[in-house]
Amino acid sequence: MSTRGERGLTLLEVTIVMALAALVVMGMIGFYISSQATWIDGSTQAIAQRDATMLVETVSQGVRRAAFAEVTSDPDSVHQTLTLHRNDGTTLQAFWWSSADSLVHQGPAAGQDVGPVVVSKVTRFQLDTLANMVTLRLVELRAGDGQLVRMASAARLCNRWTP
Image 1 (cartoon, rainbow, N blue to C red):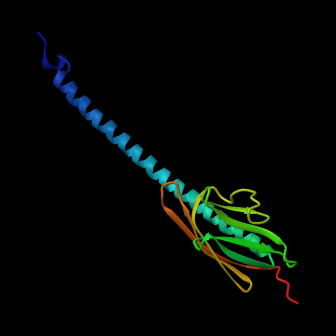
Image 2 (tube, helix red, strand yellow):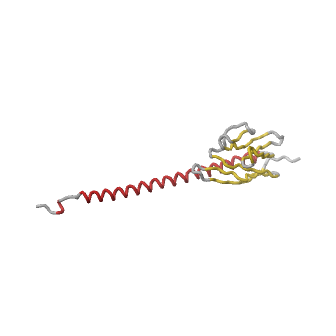
């Protein structure tokens, strides 16, 4: 004679346990995927912010070495070219936005490209000059997730020669 305890599990009990286990596993997978997406979004935003800071710092370093600066709208007022000059009027360095790749490039003069300053796409590169200051009115980069990172700054021309 067998008792109920020796009988084992019924098919219905196994099915219920498997269904509950599947729900738990699917919940864990959903949480993992959501966490990954959040981490990736945060990472692309951090990379764009790092690139914006690096771009502003690189331009500022160039400005501090220059005697005077010239800003031209090229190809439009949203994307400008900054040309930095020595006291003797020769070009020291230039920064410009390229429509070919949407990056800000640098070189010893506009068109003499040594490569992009950063790898994030730049949607706006707007500058102004006033006396001995160069103002980066707006540097706007697009992160990999589509978010925009905006930054502004100003730098003083430190090698200005006055007679």
